[in-house]
Image 1 (cartoon, one colour):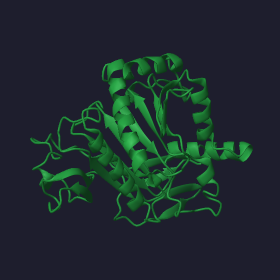
Image 2: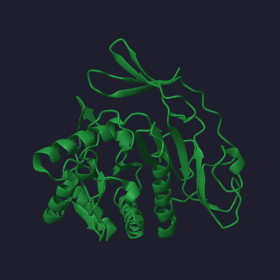
Image 3: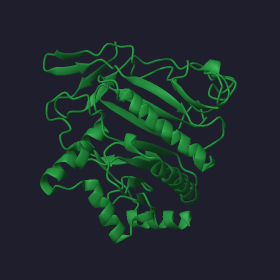
Length: 327
């Protein structure tokens, strides 16, 4: 029995699911062109004109995850078990295969290929948010994850019937800041950091690339749109083109400055605004939240004391290292 359980003391969710025995290492990469039959049937793809589904001729391809955390086939059931809340894990777990090239990375891909990946993110968010039983969609990418069985470049799209804890904390803080100051906290961060300069890695027409004042890891970086909008689905062509260039250049700088470290990339965007549970859900989100990208190098080395992150890296010095590596 798989289920989401909510801790009433902390508000955090836990997914309880049986442990699965991983299948042995495939002799060939299932994500490489020619091996399309080794994956479940594709959900979406960018293809050459006339190329049939589930065959060669694609540039970006999306398939269901074989051992998903969340399944769209499930019924959505919310239950009370005494004082505890339980929800069935209805949703989706998808794999975005980012390139036909097995050894590609976001650094070695062309700007145009990275842009295609970013457009696919937009398309999957838009499609999944049409389902009113889905409350949140998380897009993540791990690079050089310890123990990873597949090294072909891919991202993960996970849709769930609850708002993920990391986003929920940001939404609560952003709403509280807006109620007090009537301004978006992320827009204020953009203005503050550009004025201060010391933690800025790069400023482009559409984005600020910055090591946050409270960076939890050495090299942690936020990519913040300079124009306010709560949802990534709103992105237009010039913004996506700029983001593709920024991502490639930043990850190249990260590789040079920190000896090609592992990293986790997360796209934080507004939850499904049509999937309200309480009447006042998302009443100010168009004004108080700001979609953005967070990149955390070497997340497996995280150090905490009582839940507080501990880091020996001064954000101002890290930003200087990344600026120099970018240049």
